[in-house]
Image (cartoon, rainbow, N blue to C red; front, top):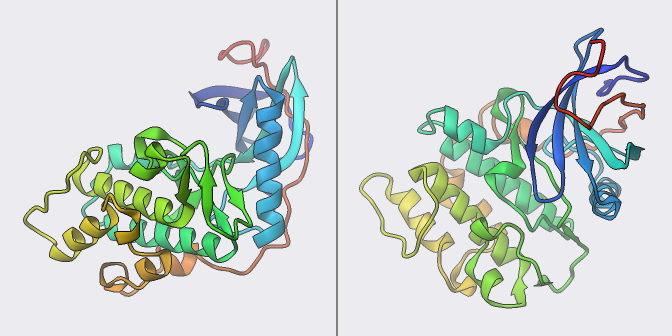
Length: 284
């Protein structure tokens, strides 16, 4: 399948937002309406780090429908470095939470997150910056994980050093220690995301169970344990009664975790974008 246009005509571009590492634009080809995302960096070293992470990711696990589709060829224009990735019109999980009722989607989304994190762990990979902004919602409400700039690969002893990712979502030990277990940290972050989907707010300890889903309350209590040793592993989490209690539907893990590697690679092209302004290029 062709994901990105080859030799496109000039594009109309819209700024989608700023992140800690760069600015993201939505590009729309003015001839055929094809849309894709351009992530632009002022610091080429950061761009190279992120693209190299995607290259390593694809080398280790291939292209998967639940992992971001990125053209790993860096491009430069007007002092900026950028790369191109597939556009997901439904936006991030954070956007989805803000715009939709989560009552019937919490289990579906959380099950997918657990399966994605476990798949990566089984291949020696830890994302290290899990958060709702880094999950985008694809077709049929399947989740896709993006932004592997901080990912760790082939970490045999599971020990992380330094930056915990995004502070607001980090597990407590990642903020308090320079050495922490990658797997248990990822599990703690998944607990914070699950709490946010359930209560529509950030987690502030301690966890106080509410009336309602006792199985969900039990799981949240274990995921939000301050002691990482008291949290489940990803293998244990994947078999937890809450995660497995409903059979997968066509829109959940069966579709999102097709582990067959795609041989299709994204095609390179030159994007004509004007990064000096958020307005359309002159003459459009």
